[in-house]
Image: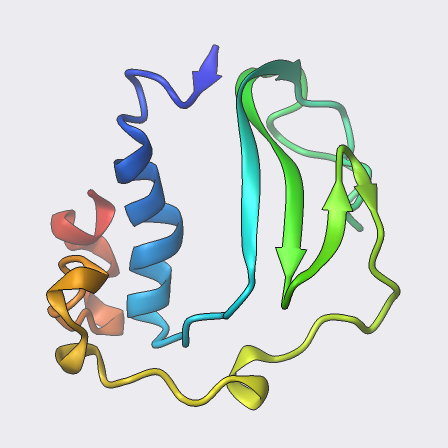
Length: 131
């Protein structure tokens, strides 16, 4: 089984890899009143096609995993809960058009983690990025 366990590390490591690093690499702004809730205990099997994906297949079909998104709040509105999308088509927005520009990467504070090191496109293979 895969998911949030010894194979992937602590919740802080997963947050760093799936939130902090992409935000830093792509210079994305913070998104006020936007977050997800995850059920860390739920175990499930990846189906042939995910319900809300245009792709009708996945190479991960049949894989046993642990951890599931239970709720998504976007700009203060619940847009997904327990497997059901509540948002109307077109509700999404380009965050760069809505939220003021993110500060330059080298100006981020320590409270924003170790995001003070700029990673260029050439460094996607950098072992520090992959951590």
